[in-house]
Image 1 (cartoon, helix red, strand yellow):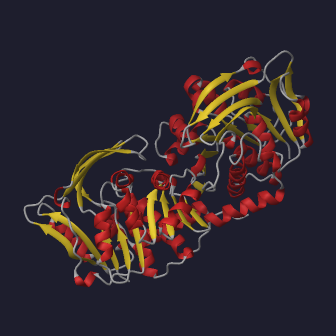
Image 2 (cartoon, helix red, strand yellow; image 1 turned 180 degrees about the vertical axis):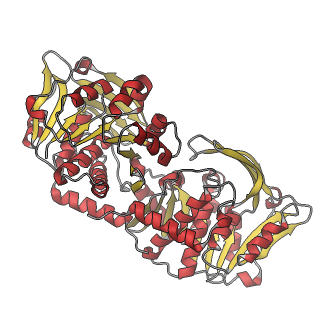
Image 3 (cartoon, chains in turn orange, blue; image 1 turned 135 degrees about the horizontal axis):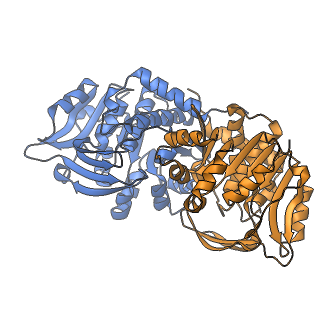
Length: 303
Length: 303
């Protein structure tokens, strides 16, 4: 099954209590596509870069089955740049720099070959761009949207408009509370289902992830790790593993979404072990199976 | 099997975003004993009160199989009083008042009939008092100690001395980091095992609880609830359910501790649904079984 991915392709400067990395490859669409590439080989990337972006990164993604027709190259443009610093608890961060650059007037026009995409992952971007992509698709089977508090602060109306047209919303717990006005995540989910989505994934970082549907709850903890170097991209990697697994299995039942949440969590647990795409590029199916086994191990109990 | 419980018996003033309660019954030992009473009927309470403490509360605990010989009554004394206010996120709180009162010079002397206790729950109190109780026991099978950052700040040496003599330590994630100097909870646990305990329970509030032993990890999420009124006593209630289940089954293997963590979490999930002991006093075995079923439901997935 085909997966359409939309989001930033970026350079990141990252500072964590455990080190720093300068001008490394980042961006939601990059993480999503890399993670999904371990599940499917028909991925259609939609983003924009400047001519400062290294060609070998593009070639590497292409070799993983990622279609780059939808990657717009702006000559004399500079790639989106983000710099951030993580607090000692790693669950919070400060944004130091956001240079939109080529993203500033990005208006995604999908290649014809993308328009029949079945599984769609709208990575965190302006709701306008997410909407523009959505309206060009002929008959998506499942649309997942990731967003953040920033868009709730500056573009809530537009965001709610897009949210009304999607199937799965992925946000963190504070964002679920902000969007719904409800403290309880159970109540927050009820309100969010009224807005349109049929499923809500609440990403809780080191505390795991919740999957909710009307009258259904599933909660997978995060894997406690000996070493966490850099949480950047963990949410996007989760999303990539989640949609990749769903597309591979082509089954959008709640039972299968539970498995997709576990696979997404497993991919995210690799992501944070190295800066940038360091670990994510070095995986194989055996490592992923073994990691999934650890999730089974830490969550299993018999009465 | 016998369970010895130690800790405060208190009056609480509580303010949460969802309401307030004045001069309600609280205290670690109270919550622990109530929770444990759903599992065993040989509970030996050790604490101190003033003559302002209502007699019917004592009678109620006695009727649940709680031995009150170790409850010291100070004539003309006032019962320990705590007042706190929870932040909007409910995972943080400010202490507004702490009146030690009769607790100020509490030196627990165990009744003879307590000294052979097998399962021991040292609730959050000064490490001195916890040590004093421990040294009077003849041959405990399992000693669990709960503590908090306050004792790490003001009495770390004494705390470490007691910790060296116990089997299971229950603390929250920030406290595990403070005690060990390690950010990763996996690494923190390794350091803590070097201090003496064979098991570590990391209480994460609305994010669940981790059970760690050397080379073993189990993570049970908290049950997402539609309504959380008051988190006070949730950790103590967890501890009471945990030790109660272990004493009832008399099995301290890691596999059984996993079940005990689930039972502890289930009891805590009831605790937070009402102020004070409101919900905890109104339970029965069927409600507990049903709640355990919900934990199975939200954590189960098949590959």
